[in-house]
Length: 188
Image (cartoon, rainbow, N blue to C red; front, side):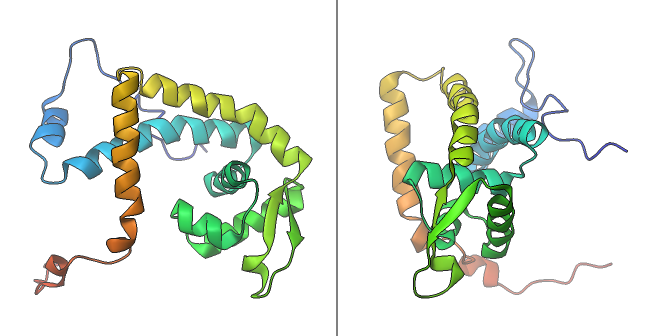
């Protein structure tokens, strides 16, 4: 029995030459939340085929690969570090880390005070081999995605988005006051 269809299976994001659906126009230019639409749309277009490929070729789920990628970028870190910088819940990452350890892709080097979440995690030689084999596909996909921008535009985009990321502590995880209004019951 086949699994659920993904955006990758449905040609998500693929348009015929010159075609711009009315709904895409509305989401781009008449949307009260234009930034989050763009971020989510591009993230889905980028992530869906890559993580499907990682799953199909290497048997890794997205959180597992995110742990590997995070540890590779920072040359090690703790489960807490990965959780705080990936958006994945700690329990999801704990399962991912346990599986990656069993697979021999990561290793815990030293236990720090504070228990398991504070231990230093590092890629094993096998983990590095997997990252070195897969990272070029992620890099190539990003390059394809940003092809429409000049080098200066890319740099400006990176700087602006980094500013938003660094300010996330001011709003992430909490609902805005507008969400605390009196909620009306929706008839069942």
